[in-house]
Image 1 (spheres, helix red, strand yellow):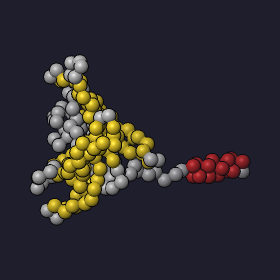
Image 2 (tube, one colour):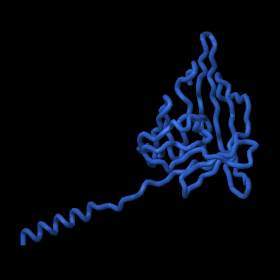
Image 3 (cartoon, one colour):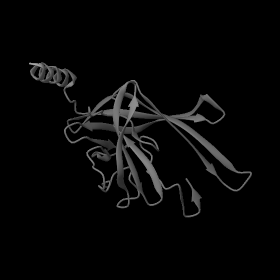
Image 4 (cartoon, rainbow, N blue to C red):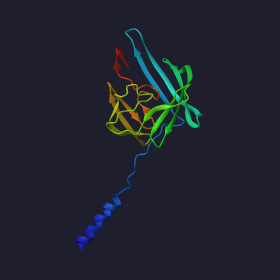
Amino acid sequence: MKKFCFTVFISLLLISSIRPLNAQTYWTLPDSNVIWGVAYALVYPPPWGYNYYYQYFITDDTLVNGIVYHRLEKADYDIFCKQNINYRMYAGAFRNDVPDKKVYYLPPDFDHDTLLDDFSLSIGDTLPPSYANIAYPNVYVIYIDSILINSNYHKRFMLAGSGMDIYLTEGVGNSTGPLEGMAYFEGGGWLY
């Protein structure tokens, strides 16, 4: 009887501790209420140099060849005062391909899109040619983990190759900026 009760107790304990396993949610790039900020510095021999700061934001949707895209605008700010906008311009549009876990970009004055981000990759995969992958075929996934953003875990890919280490994060894009090339840190006499 003791053995039976102990077995039932252990069985109930194990059953009560089992939780359903949830697959990680795929996070698309947002379609509204988001601003991507990009800041970088060009360093020339002293005393020259310049710091850049600009933002991308979604203005509305547009229909191109029967496909809905989210329009992006880019605002360039004065480096000394973020309130002073030097210019604002149309920067293209993007769309999320949810089934394939990819994002496509439609550059200004183009009638067809190109791959921007691919979130279907596995460890060891080569990042396919894309608008941002200027180092193709030398960029590959070295590991995949998750990062907590607004109480939700987003899949993050660590990319390496050709002297760079860049993250590609679901719902965010690449760590150099939404449309910026995945550039080398240093190359050809330039420090990026």
